[in-house]
Amino acid sequence: MLPITTDKIAEVIILARELNRAEPEFDGFVNHLTQTEQAVLVAVFWIGRGNFEPEELDEALRTAAEEATTPTAEYLKGSPHLANHLETGLEALGIDPTVLQDDLL
Image (cartoon, rainbow, N blue to C red; front, top):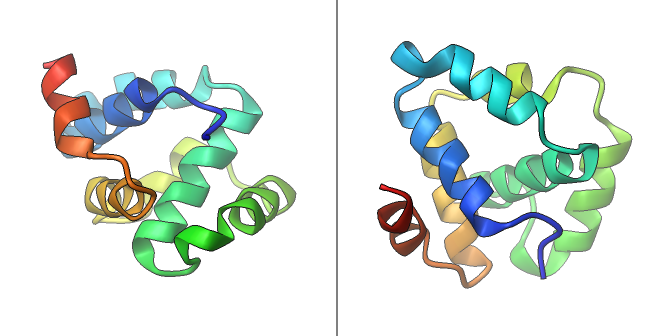
């Protein structure tokens, strides 16, 4: 399905919720993901924000990869609702983000 483990997305959600305290950890985690994994984060974020529909995942992935001009961590931190958008994007894709986060905590 997604070319990233859902655990990694859940970790980003957890770090995003604690961004004031965990910004260096957030940056380090996102920056160590592959370019493909970073594009998936952006695509899921966009789906959660309503820029793309779940059926348009492939298009969102292509667009995220092609338009990556800002470091992904910086781009994502620009949204005050990052964690919510990632959760909504996962839900739209049929993945329960609550279970994923609970497993990590």
